[in-house]
Length: 101
Image (cartoon, rainbow, N blue to C red; front, side):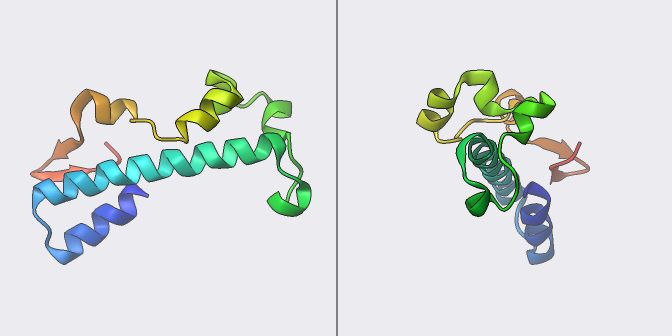
């Protein structure tokens, strides 16, 4: 998500501060998407999900609900700041925001 938003900002000629904000937003959107997907994998029907549920747990995958519990994951709604955003509020490289460094 971050890469898509950053590339759009670069093409549009956005200022560095806007690039950083978009990278941060992309991290949040990506985390929210993944947490939602993890939650669906724990309880959705095959019809809803389009694939077998419970496969993450069966494989022992590290998921957000597994780390904090399903109720806490649902309560937080997936709005978590990625460690990179907490530590540095975006990463800078060559005068541009970067999502993948």
